[in-house]
Image 1: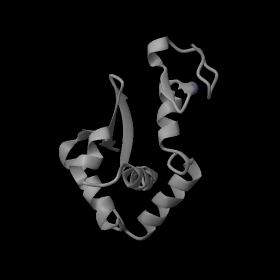
Image 2 (image 1 turned 90 degrees about the vertical axis):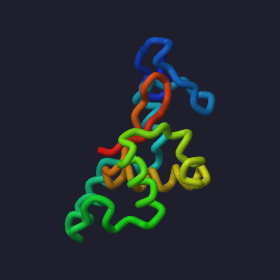
Image 3 (image 1 turned 45 degrees about the horizontal axis):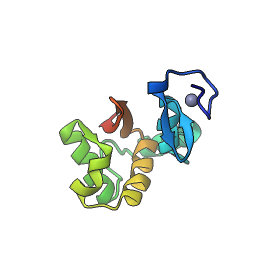
Image 4 (image 1 turned 135 degrees about the horizontal axis):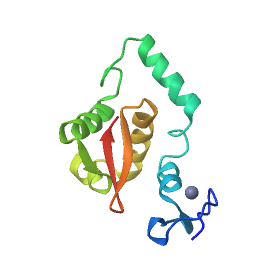
Length: 121
Ligand SMILES: [Zn+2]
């Protein structure tokens, strides 16, 4: 099967349907984190400003971001679809906050056995 985004040929079981598109694993994860999370320039400036401000770990995060980050950190790996319920956050809000945390290279998505997990960097 051909990935609709990068046009690479990949095995059928590597393909994930996402909004009507057939995506390979890399593109699927990239797509989940759009728009800002996968922008390397933005990541590097977010990181630099945190370093400049002496922010490490969860310093400089909002309470909500800390809640997400600390929960994932304490559990090492959490299935993404379970987080809204566990943390009592609407899925869209979680997505937004996750993009920021991904941005600062605190959390990242990982696909294991067709499930998306969130882990620390
Ligand atoms: Zn692809």
